[in-house]
Amino acid sequence: MKRSIVMSMLAGVTLLASAILGAGPAQASGVPAEFGTDWHDPLTASPPVAKPSGKSCQVTVAEAQFRDFTPYRGTYTPPDGCGDRWSKVVLRLDGKVKGRQYDRLGYLHVGGVEIFRTSTPEPSPDGIEWSVEKDVTRYSDTFRRGQDVEMLIGNVVDDTYTGVLDVKVTLTFYAGKETGKPATTPDRVLTLGADGTLTTPRNSERILAEVYATGSGGGCEEYWYLSVPDSAPYSCQAENGPYREVQIKVDGQLAGIAAPFPNVWTGGWSNPFLWYVVPGPRAFDVTPIEYDLTPFAGILNDGRPHRIEVSVAGVPEGQSGWSAPVNVLVWQDAHRARVTGKLTRLEAGDLANSSTYTPGTEHRVETEGGHGLTVAGYVDTSHGRVTTTVTRTLATTSAHRWTDGETVDGLDARWTDDEKVTVDGRGPARTTRTHRAYTMNGTTTVGADDRLRTVLALGDRADAVTTHGGWRTSWSKLDDTYTGDATYTLNVPRDQRHAVAATGERYRRYGSDGCYDRRLTTVQGVLTEDRDGC
Figure (cartoon, rainbow, N blue to C red):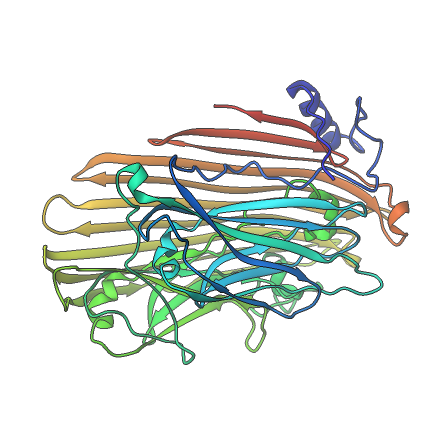
């Protein structure tokens, strides 16, 4: 049930500051003293997908109630009346749930291609509704044909966990002719074979892999950033500490590296009251990691299957907990049946990973890690030789502190992922530089009265700039920041938790394409501020 109480900015800021600096949120008109049986429907500060004007067609892809781990299976039929070259394709999930339920992870496959990965909010006893939008235009090749559909949000429903996840997913297609021309999308969207191999078209001139990497499953890899070396007395141990790196290999050769995003699902940090209204960044729309595999096109274009492997460095041997499905996006040379080329450079630095454990009244593990990789190769296309060089540099620093019994448990961590891609062919070279930075700073404390309090800040930031012949042609900056402070009583029935929380999110994105700035603030599940800044 949606309840919207939008107060002035001053009131919202005062309430949030009170929660962070004092024992709990201050009361204000329309805000209850503690959580009740209902709260505002979940929402995020991220922007809606911009939609073209003109003709559109909608197709329902999946409609199901998830009670267990049985996937929904159906069929997809392309839309009738909007052509097959679209300016944009928008996915929308609408969900509702009531009662008691954990956060759950889900996926949607169309023709075997993973087009969406998500997690769910935790419900109120009275029930909540939420929605997610995603631009899925890049999968247009998949949508042009009838396909099998599979969707799963694994769930458990019993006498304790009563929430049935009721969801509907639609695709809306916007006809390309209404906006002058259709979107420039990959010519092919491929998945790996059952044996983990990939066969690309022999005239591929650009190849990207995307990996929906998530640590999950309820075990320690869901909280991989909190793991400590085996020598330290903590509930989640890993031989090499908390450093994680998602790697992709082509025929056994390292082809790409990336820092995984530190997803926090809506039950994270032992405190669901942090997330009842505003989830952490990317929780409802998991962003895939992208790897530019174009330097390997000369190898992949030989018409034979090649082995593609994704692994997560740092996971203890034999331990599961990560999911990493792969899609491969291919752009083809329309004027050549065969594009040849060569991998000319592959330089991987040593992976650095050091965790230092310091025992004491407050235990401490400090970790530093990083890695670098450069790959380069060329393809001989109908428009000349094109060389692609990809350089990626990762770095991690974290300080984890906790007391005996983990009654105090805190982390201050930062991950950076810097990438430079240069495409050099006929005409001036084009270079795109991207700097990604993820931050997590929080502490959970359990007092003598069994009051658990979590104070947490999360950051998802990225700067990107593209130059052509040395001249800047586009740029963008993203800063998505979440802050929360929530307290409740452990080991009592739900209606005796006396929970209070103040949470907020500010999503800012600006650059050569314009500006977007939205701020949300909530107190005890009531939306007290929803403001646009641009």
